[in-house]
Each structure stands twice: as structure tokens, then as C-alpha cells.
Amino acid sequence: MPKVDTTPAAILEAVRKIDIVSELLDEKNKNNLKMIVEGKVSGGKQIGPYARLLAYEPGETIMREGDWGGNTFYLSVAGDVDVYVKDDSGKEKKVARLAPGACLGERSILAGIPRNATIRAADGASVLELVRPALRLLRSLKKFAEKVDDSYRNHGLANAIAQLQEQTGGALNPLDLVALGNVSQFMAYGKHHVLVQEGMPIDRIFLIRSGWVRRGSPLEFEPCQGGRRKPGLRARKAPSMRCLPR
Image (cartoon, rainbow, N blue to C red; front, side, top):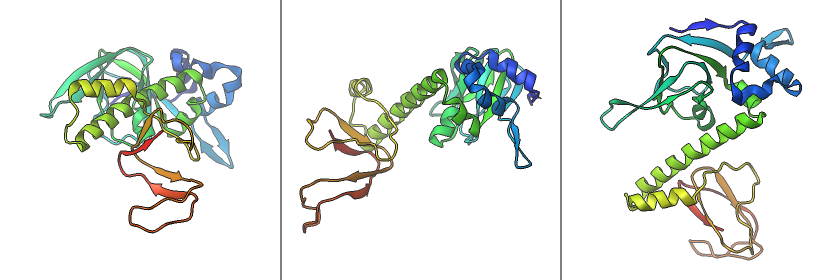
């Protein structure tokens, strides 16, 4: 079990060492820093703090592949950490060693998925463990937001391509997969975002992995099962990998 330190001074010192959250130390972010490091009392109840400092022995597991970790993620403070994933036979294989400053486990929160790797301290390591509310505060920081968004998109793109390959029965060869990855982006759009604008040239297609889309047109159209409908907006749930032209 790791050694736990919840003192504000220790957590603040850890924040100072992590480049991607260094903006927390700016005057404009002092309230967010206080919530993460110390918390506050509101309505007679303690809210936060949202972080604690954990020190791991060499080889000790920080997070484990397959576990659900939707409420916590980590920022490595000192010491390298090793990344392991399981192969098809279930055997663990070391795939990377990460230096201090890495963000770990944030995709479980963003995507609502189990951990996709096991992380262990190499020769001993300390990490900041943060809970879900801290992610919202940290995403207001430019460096942190860019790093997390890039990681989420790259991971999401790889998963989407793998899902497409599975649904097409392995129709894409290795060169096709590489080419598709090079010309594609994985994006998450908010409510009311316009994907396709009527009358504009088609210059891309969208593969909708999940969520709802709404289609509107000033012209009547012929639905698949016959009959005509009045024009307007129609909500349609997009099944896995529905394709929209643009």
C-alpha cells in the first residue's frame, strides 16, 4: 500500500513540480488551486480537497488494467512509472516507461471505460491522486487541456478504427488502416454543433460512433419505408459507425 500524505504543503509542493498544471500557481487560478489542495467549507460541509499525495515502493501497482477507475486519475510527481498491457494470451507486456509529469488514467473518466493499462512504480514513485471534480478545474488550464484532449483523441481514433475493422470483418489491410489513421480525427461534439451544412461542397465524411444527430432540410424527402413527410428537424439515434457525408 502506498504512503498517503494529505497535508496542503506537500500537495502544493507536488503541484509546483508538474509542468502541465503549473498555471494553477497563477493568481487568476488561486481559487481552483485552493479547492484542489485544501478544499473549502460551504453550508457547514467540507468540500474537497481533491488531491492527495501517494508514495509507492518499487514495483508497486498504481492502477490495474481492466479495473473501473471512473473517479480518480493521477499526475506523476517523482520517479518513473512503467506501463504494461496484456497480449491476446493474457500475459503482461511492458510497453513504455513514463517520466515524471505524466497524466495517468484520465481516459477512464473522459470515456467512462475501464483502465486500459497497468501502471507500476519503477524504482519507487510519487503521484498526485485526483478525483473527478479536479478534472473540470484542471481543464481550464491551457497546457493540461491540450495534453488531455490530444491523448483522448488519439486513443479514441485508435479504438474507432479498430471497431470499424471489426464491423467490416477485417476488410481493411494494414496499409488501409495506416492511411485511415493519417486522414482521420476523433472528435467529441457538444449539443447543437453543426456537422453538415446544406448546400456546402462535400469535403469529408463523418463516422458517428455514438450519440444522437438531428437532420433538417427545407425539402421533402422519401423515407426508407415509403410515404412522404413534411420537412423539418428529425432526431435520429446514430447506430455504431453511421456515416454522414460532408
